[in-house]
Length: 599
Image (tube, rainbow, N blue to C red; front, top):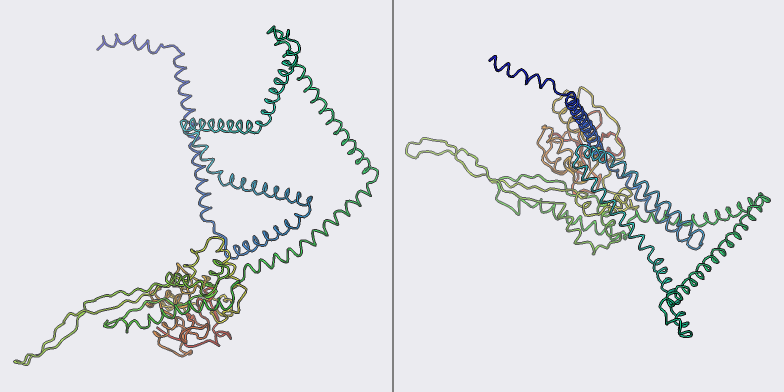
C-alpha cells in the first residue's frame, strides 16, 4: 500500500501543478454556462409572463358581453341613416367638380383613418401573442434560426416583388429609350447609305464606313440633347412665369387684406348656404327612409292573415292534444306534460318582414308550416307498469274465503308537447343584417302597435321593489319557493318559455318554480291547466305561496289567461315583462282578477 501511495504521489502532484491557464479556461466556461443558464431562465420567465398576459386578454375577450338589443337597434338605424345621408350628399356634390374633388379627398381621408384605426386595434389585440412569440423565439435557438430564415425569405420575396413592380412600371420608359437608340442607329445608317451612294469611295474602306456612321450617330445624339435642353428651358420659363403670377397675387393680398378677407367670407357664406339648403331635404328624406326601414312594409290584411293562419295551426295542435284520450283509447292513465301553445304575433311579423321585406299571405304558407313544425314537438310514449290487485275467492266445498295479490299490466300513455319558443326557431334562420332589422322591428312593433292590441304585455306597472316579510319566510315551503323564484327576477317574458334555457312565460315560470323547489311536482301546462289542478279559495283565505289567476289579459282560448305566485301583503311575483313583483290591488290587476288557488 505504501508503494502505491509513493508511486501515486508524483502523479497527484503533477495534477495539482497544472498550468493556471487551464483553470482560467474552466472558470470562463463555467461563467459562460451560468450566463447562458441565467439568460434562459430570464427568457422562460418573460415567456411565462407573456403567456399569462395573453391568457388574461383572451379570457377578458371571451367574457366580454355582446352588445345588447338596444345598442344593436341604434347601431342599425344609425348605419342606415348615415349611408343614406352620405349617398345623397354625394349625389348633390357630384354636380360641382370642385366639391366632388373635396368629397373624394374626404373619402380617402376617412378610409385612411379607418385603416389606421383597424391597424392600431389589431396591433393592440395581437400584442400579447406577439410577445409570447418573441420570448418563444428567444428560448428556442433553432426556432429563432428558422424564423430568421423565414424573415430573410420574406424580405427577399418583398425585394423581388418590388423589383418586378418597378420593372413593370419602368417598362414603357425603357421601351422608349430602347427604340430611341434604335431610331438613331437606323437614321445614321440611312444617311450613311445615302452618302455612300453619292460617294462610292466611302464604302470601299471598312474603317471609313465605321467612322462615318459614328459621326452621324454623334450628330443625332447632339440634336436629341439640344432638344431636351430646349424643353427644360421652356419649362423653367413657364415656372418663372407662374412664380411671377404667384408673387403678384401675394403682393395684392398684402396691399388689400380687407378686400381679400371680405371676398373669402362671401364665398364661404355662399358655400354654406348651398350646403345647408341641400342637406336639410336630404336629412329629412334620410330620417323618413330610416323610419320606413323599421316599419312593416306589408299590407295590414296580409300581416293579420298570416298570423291567423299560424294561429289556426296552433289551434289544430291544441285540439289534437285535447282529443288524445278519444283518438288513443284503452289506456288506464294519461299523463300530460304540455307546454303552452301560443306565439307573439309581432315576433312572427318581424321575422317575415326582416326576411322578405314585403310578403303576401299566399307566399309564406310553406314557411309557416316549417316554422310551426320546428317550434312544436308532440310525442306519445307508452309505459307499462306491473301492479297488483287484491282478489277474493271462496271454496265451494269448504266455504273458506281466501284473498291473494294478483299482478296485472297497467298501461300509461305519456303525452309530451314541447314548445321551443318562436324566437329560438326563427333567429337561426336569419343572417346578421336581418337579425338587426328583426330586433328593431320587434322593439318598435313595426310602427304598427295597433295591429294586435289584445296581446299580453305584462300589466301596466313596471314592477316595484319589494322585500318579503321575514315572518312569511318562516314557512319552509314558501321559503323554498322564493329561493327558486327570486333567481329569475328581471328575466324577460318569452312566449312559450318554460326553463332557464329559454326564459319563461307566466305558466312556465310557475310550473318551473313549484317543481324545481320541490314544493309540488307541477308538470308543464297552461295557466288554465294550473287552475284546473288547484283548490279554489277565497281572497280572505289566501296566504303566501298560493297561486293567483287572472282573465282577459290577452285573447286566450280559456277563461284563465295569466298566473302568478302570491307572496302576501297584496303583492305577487309573476312573469310579466320582465319577471317582477306586482301590486295586485292596482286598477289593472283588479280589473282582470279571476281567483286564488292552492295546490
